[in-house]
Amino acid sequence: MAVPVVDFSACGLQRADVDVEDMRSAARELHTAFTQVGLVFLQNSGISPKEVSRVLDSSQRFFQLPGKEKQVFSRSSFPNPNHGWVSKESESLNPERPADLKEAFNVSSLDPHIRWPSGPLCDFQEIQTSFFLRCKELSLRVLKVMALSLDLDPEVFLGAHRLIGTQQNGSTLRSLFYGPVRREEVRENQLRCGEHSDYGSITLLFQGSEGLQVLSRSGSYLDVPLVPGAVLVNIADLMQRWTSDCFVSALHRVLLPPAGDCSTRQSLAFFVQPDDDAVIRCCDGSDKYPPVSSGLYLQKRLQAADKSIQQQADLQ
Image (cartoon, rainbow, N blue to C red; front, side, top):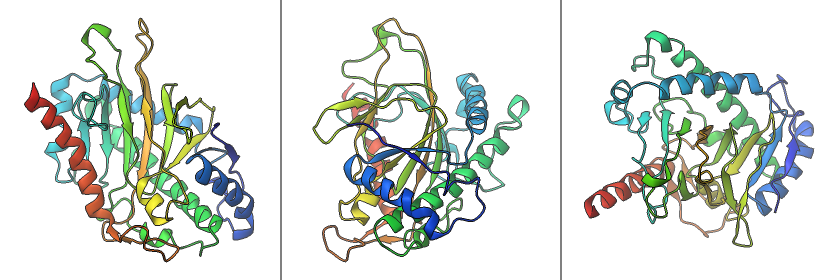
């Protein structure tokens, strides 16, 4: 299984207006990718490598801060429980493994009154929020093409994503940092990020280096390559429910580097979530999955990742 690469130039952000006819070729290719693999690389999306590098550099400067300075921006310090810094080994996306060897900064709120890093990081807010909005715009283009690929009204998915960037929607830009791995400190079966599927509609992923693996239909994990300039888009769990398993949400993970390799890894993930009050029903009219509230579904999934960490701590 190879992850398909699709030229998205006819639908990308470099174009101010895109009509249905422009989308048809991309729609056919996305349908094949999302039904057979669950992932696709989009070339010529309109988001440039320079934009991505700017966000990665901004995030790296934050991750290099002392722990006490980062702690001020921990998730527990914000009203939005998914906004802010996530410290190393504070999540376990696969509860059967030890905590993940990663840290992150989540942008889930664009409220102008929340605290942001300042001083040497005075541009952090502008860089992160600007990229959030760029990812939002690209996500809406992709969702429109996806609807068309299913012979649905092109606006059908957009109606449930009108509040991205507000407190009524859980979409999140997550900057991820996987630090150097010291093998003598790694616990048995521990990974940089354990096996999991994403929670919402789709995810946009911008990779800085290799290390990601995806579970194929044959049941084996395969390396996901780097495709320069491309954004990796994968189906998430609510979209699989929404499409009655037509589109596939694939398990994925991030491995440890080879022994003796002290390199780091960075990536940017934009997790697209339907509005909190959106009720997700099978779009084919079937009852394969019962209706579910997007906000409650996300809340339960986030709580499960945190709960697994507490259970592991209780066993130690």
